[in-house]
Image (cartoon, rainbow, N blue to C red; front, side, top):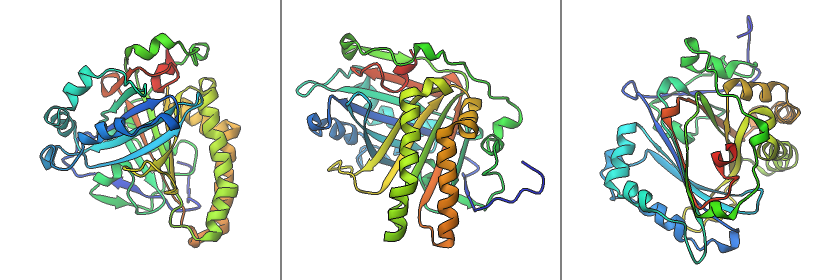
Length: 341
């Protein structure tokens, strides 16, 4: 942190109960050739394992929601993002709900054809950090005990690393990405395979979200016309050219209704995987796409001041190999961590 540093605006962080040693974030999804071919059955299947009463309350996720995205190959991806307050709770849910058995036997869907994907992250709390602009909980913060802040460790370059407790004793060096292996051409034979990707040393997962549902009309127009365009451009860069900056995968997803899967909730988030914390830091500090996002937000926040209703958050996980699960059934080669092969 720079000497005598004072942030230009307030950010807050979540504090978890003392008994919380680790948490679990799972992305359980289905991939259809297009939005039009989504018949809703895959989401209904996934949701059946999360329905109230399926398992005892101690094994239920602390929070879950549904999001979707059409990727750069035109495939429609629908997923449940679920969080548990411990690895034990997740394992109990997986076994007692029948999800583990179902997943072990799952095959690509037919009529319409679709694939499945499972991405699970199990960080210890020293490998997780959260920040947000308001007290509204997002993601893992639904399991917090309290809010702390305003905090000083933000806005300056390097603040993300300073917020990670593990960084005090670990340089968090990752595994370098070979950009020439990214984005292998699609091969239809892969659509029938179950592929598991091994974990990587200090893989970085960032979920960064935006919620403008509470904004008044003037701010809503400002967000859509000024903030959103550079944000979308930056996420598309990471999605399509991420190998240049160490980004292995990026999905810019929209929160949707869990029953109708319709959008319009004015909530989006990026879910991105980086090969190294330093790669994410460099992109944030140096790349034109993030500088455009950062610069536009500074103007946005300054113009609105205390009237700003836009809510922003992010959660960053830096994971050991054994704290990661990536498995894909019948998905194209650009899906999630398949793109890192």
